[in-house]
Amino acid sequence: MDMGIEKIKDLIINSAKKKAEEMIETAKRDLEEEFSKFKKQLDEEYQARLERLKREIDEEFDRAKVIEISKIEKKKLLKKKEILDEFFEHLKSMMMKDEKSYKKMLITLLKRDVVDGSTVYLNGDDLKKFGKDFEKLIYQDLKLNDVKIEESPINIKGGLIIKSPNFEIDDSIDELVDSFREEKEIEIAKEIFG
Image 1 (cartoon, helix red, strand yellow):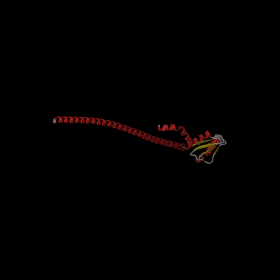
Image 2 (spheres, one colour):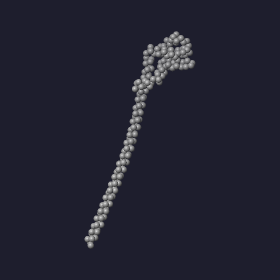
Image 3 (cartoon, one colour):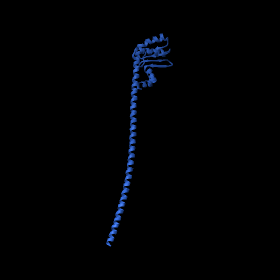
Image 4 (spheres, one colour):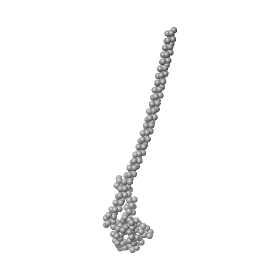
């Protein structure tokens, strides 16, 4: 009988071992499945986070690029303005450089704008150089009797200003070039800068 109990005992132990092994295998499979799910979820979260960070970096890079491009464009515009300012200042100097051409321009302005009852204002240099010639032009050539050349110089770079009780015409070099600039600056900028 001992043998029968031993056999039963072995059967129970073997059955228990088999059941335990099956349970261990099932638990192992469940753990591996859970681990696989966890790993997949972790990978997905990592990829999503990586994509989000990449997008944020790209957006930040694009913003920085736009800011830098804006800074460069602003510098270019300032440089273009500086070049145009220098160009128009040079134009003012060139208009006065050749005395003969400058005097001819002043005479043209006088003929165009002076009327009886007006006063002509010049800067100190022009008053000394051209004052007497302009009086002759006004009285003899233009046959105007009520025009005065002001003896006190005014503070302008060059050109002239004509005043009457009804109007004032600013034909100073600064005003002439500024008017020309307003009219032609876009065209000149296209020509210079393409």
